[in-house]
Image (tube, rainbow, N blue to C red; front, side, top):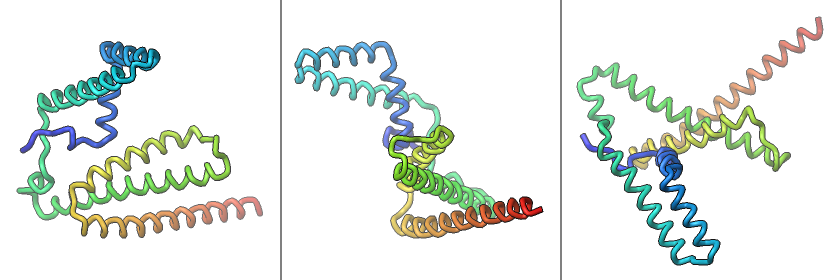
Length: 188
């Protein structure tokens, strides 16, 4: 079993950790000092301070991971000793989760593109959370896909596109069914 490193973490997790570090009072003081350097046109000092702040963020995350009790383990090692049925169930669930994450990203991006086409400055609050889920899903899919080979990734991408289109068509069918029932109800 190997210890986790900063490279093992999804980007959004690293960014949230950095945001927590930046909210620390000592880091806020450094940020204020950085802003003061920029205002007084001391750009070399500002650049150097920014570099130090980034190193502090990375060092804090690395120190946390060094003391973190959890460890990373390959999926193959985790599945050792499992029955073939349980191994199959794990594979099915893992791939289904990745497919769902991919679909959340795809549909939320498409929704946003259509909305922006007609209302560039608008957003629907009820979709804000879905959009953030889509972005987070993207980072998790990217993280998981880095653990597989290129042949699997290409095959998965093709299948994901087919399944996404199948879900899109199923949604259209459901909408037609609901509209048909509403039409029948209105005709009574």
